[in-house]
Length: 452
Image 1 (cartoon, rainbow, N blue to C red):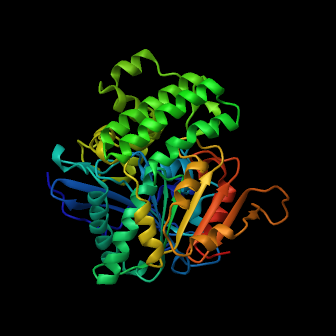
Image 2: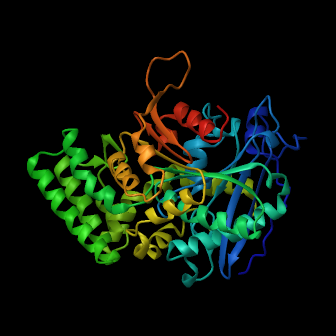
Image 3: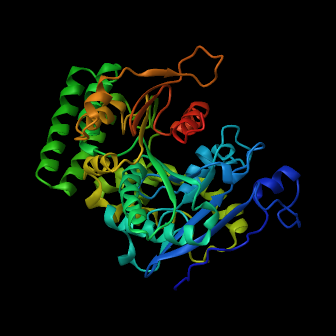
């Protein structure tokens, strides 16, 4: 089945407006052409590869959407859905109970959610050989989508455009940002690209793995023996990466996580103050059998497609959108997305961040204090490896405290900025910063987009 790009559709009334008015989704409503407006569509980015996007126009009581930036949100996994998890669990106008979110980013920016790579969320492929297998394909697919989007939605061509990301989405965002910068320089895409933000991002996987032991030990979640066990397997991961044996490094990464779970009584990799729910034997038996990949998928992608969110997306949201093919279910191809990217998992992209900085692109790194999978120590480690000429000056700066509210004395974050690099240390947040600390996440977004 081949879908032609359909990108200038006028959709049904937005769900948010209908809910606030207390009307059924079948009601006829004259809704504003700007405030509360939503559009969505598919773009065929390659033969047999179709990518879904969903745009919300900013709803600020004092400003028109044209006076506010456009933010594209990229989820991790790979295989996590921006239109689902990022939208309803983190920064969109409604939460997963379809209630208005107080800290939605929509009050300060228009939001573009893209299910990326193809096969994620409502995006889908027609044939198994159409899945992306590396970052280069992920980035080139996104260039097709962004060119189509900006060509059709010319009202956004001059509005400052930012890419915000989380987890593996940050690794993809780095590659996408560099290709977008080149496309703009070459004149193939017209947009006002203003920066990329890398949240708890898998930029240098081995630096994360190497820091897990020391981090857990420092917060009393490993003893001496546990630290020695974790450190030993981390060194094996490093050796495999140094030899370019990336699939072997992925397998060893999985082993490191098992060792950590055994020594910490099941610490949650997304927030060290909580524990992982044990996997039931039935669920375990239903998972695919490539053991190390199965465990990694279950730990890092399956929760992004949790049952309650899947019911929402495959129920009311699918009905609202009205364009999802009958044989496509939200999250139905996520497992295959993850499997096909196996050879890319452990490859670092520090050099891409260096290229972005040297090209003058604004780069923001932000990280949750309680995250383990991409802990702050690991982020700091790869930042120190940058070859950016201004890095020594960045390193010499002292960080500054941030507060969610001007009257508050409680420190919510620290920040350090120099030239086109910024680093935010977000306190009391795990891997999903906007979910854990919505107020400071919104404030950070406003700072990054130069609204404060």
